[in-house]
Image 1 (spheres, helix red, strand yellow):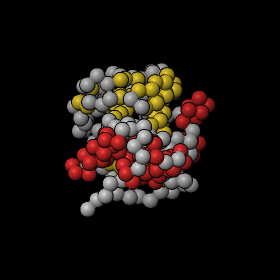
Image 2 (cartoon, rainbow, N blue to C red; image 1 turned 45 degrees about the vertical axis):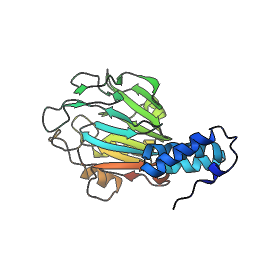
Image 3 (cartoon, rainbow, N blue to C red; image 1 turned 120 degrees about the vertical axis):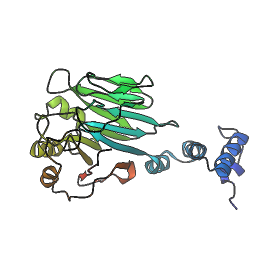
Image 4 (spheres, rainbow, N blue to C red; image 1 turned 60 degrees about the vertical axis):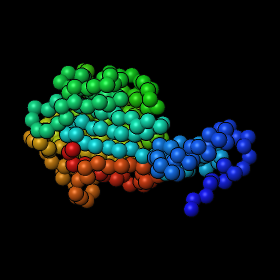
Amino acid sequence: MNSLPSDLLSSRSSEQPYTEKLCLFCVALNAHDTLAMYQYIRYTILTQISPLQRDLTFLHLLRMHITWLGSTAIKIQTKPDEKEITVVIDPYRPKTGQFPRSLAPDLALFTRGEDDAITLSGNPFVLSSPGEIETKGILVASVQGHEPNTVMFRIDVEQMSVGHLGLANKPLTDAQELMLSGVDILFVPVGGKGGYDADAAAKAVNMLEPRVVIPIAFKSDTNPTVDDVQPFLKEMGAKITTPEKKVILKKKDLPEEETQVIVLAKE
């Protein structure tokens, strides 16, 4: 039999009323309600432990779901608060191969303008030019790319930072390096023929020093004429492993020393 948490049996003078805490815990316990349990844990973290303990505990809760849709298109699902947020980057309609006909993101980011995008329902916030916005608990900054009407993105959410280079094909400028240096997770094109080839991609990674690098824009059914990912893995000295359909990255699991390469299979 599960016992009540000690804070429910202690003083009732805390910020949240005793009955409200009790109900919240019982809902989570009896119904196995993930959101209710999350709310209870979040309340406990915010009000019952020291700031240091709170920060260390949050490291175990923070996570990001990442899916590669082909070419430079990425879908990120995260939960900065109680509602899951979906971010899509570069949802361009390909000329060949399978790709979603429509998506319903909360935030849509475009590195090469908004033309040729698939249908986006639900009235998402859209950014395709240099600037900075904060919406739904997510901070997004964009810097001018190498060509007119192109940008690169930095996303900060869940105490993790993400960089997306779009279809970069030239050495990074000082402004690009300044914004993207030291991001936790970096999406970098590696297939050549319009974007970085393996050698140029590895140089960009070494310049920015991310904790995790995820190659994009390599050979797939939506981009069949570009190079495969293997030359980039060789340049990075990374092992060739079976690509993953989706990766879940947690703040506490990010590597501290060497950059980790994660290859995703196209969804």
